[in-house]
Image 1: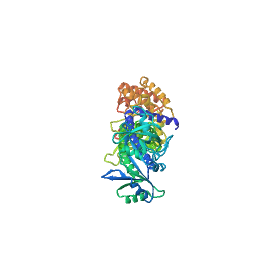
Image 2 (image 1 turned 90 degrees about the vertical axis):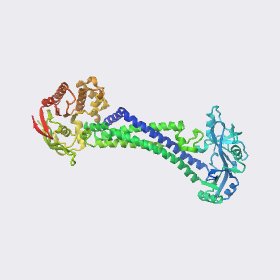
Image 3 (image 1 turned 180 degrees about the vertical axis):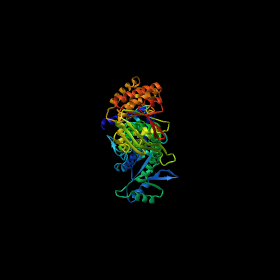
Image 4 (image 1 turned 45 degrees about the horizontal axis):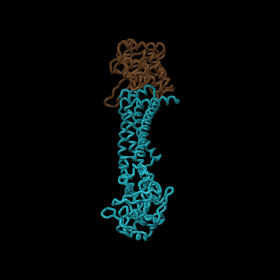
Length: 404
Length: 227
């Protein structure tokens, strides 16, 4: 049989999609919801995983903190000397971390660094400057390098300001004063979570903004000598400075991925439940339980349709429905995540580390993710629709028609 | 005249080897000649519908042989049986089994969709067939919008779409009045005379039974008398 017959079967299948409206709409809506939830979560999860990877690549090998009563407290900068002298340490530099506002209501991440020590670390976050700007000098005070998010934030504010090299911005200090900073550069970074809203400045200016005492810092960033095992160096540092909390690159990565992975897992569980509901609808509608669909298969067989003709019709129906449902779901997820910023879901997934500027949510769409979305949407529906039809199609038409 | 349909000692058992085992047809042997109208009469449960399903290749006999012309068809593979249903046999079902979401034309065109005739051509032929049965005013009506007699005519039109050699009709007058029954029978008679169609009909209706060329009375799954 030729093309015309397949064209007839396709036409009949598409006609069924339109004619069985309630069934078609139920499957499409259910698939739409399940796919949009999973796609939205996957775009963010994949983005976060990539972002974490980038942030760790741009970060130090080891971070040293100090905890008292479970809370992070300032570290004396005197620790830096001990750290630097530890075998396997290439460089160690104190950093000041905290949050401040530019009066827009959005908090920005402030990081104060020792310009010369930090700037020597090629690839460290904030050191790759875009366009005309420059990195910090040792003598710089009241200068800042900013992430792209701050430019976006100021451009979108009630009184839009085009921030560029040379722009003066005021940061609100810990005690409510204003300190003026000059933008000397804009940095590029593979990590959005850590860099999008970041202000990089010298350590003294950062202390002024965040209220740190002289000779203290938030943490110490440590880079190990090439070839040295970071875990061994971390162990030595832990032994050397018993009060220190020593975190390696891998430990930070693990804890972050566990946090995001766990939340994404909950969303995937929700998606699985919804998908199962879709499969049940498809299974019911395709003839496993539906008397009407079962009888239709018997009738087609009685009228001379082969088993493969019946299966072709059912496959085309379910592929059409599932492609439509999944495509709508993915499209909605793209709009929801990339245009609307993924409200609710991003908050749930990113938790405390949700970027304070909405544009900073890391998002990634990969072909593999889209392929998986289609596969997990189309295949179960296809199986749920075709198997009952196949079972009916291989049964004698008389038995199917009479329901015996 | 050569027999178009022949059955030899055919049995059909449902629920074999279970407490619900029923021999719906027992040792059925009959011959139906080409270009005749044969009626199967008998009480409910006498095996008329099962006999029609057997000779219409909708089910296989548990024992015995069925011939269409010289070919033994009871042992054929499902692919060949399906092909024979597609090309040689037309069915008028008691319950019609029309697809309610489709129009009269779409229902009638259905048997041609599994052939190499395009859908538009199939629907054109379906319109012609329905028009020939006086349904020109109802071509695009959905099944739920048609009366019992109209449904019956849609069923007949569909059964004739593949230009069958054999037409099998199960209780064709069950849902229509006597006037419509006579119209239906007249239509079938014309087709037998003009096109050499062989009609096998199962019915309780005396009008139908009297109209047939041959009457086979069934009881308890087998033919108990003929006239």
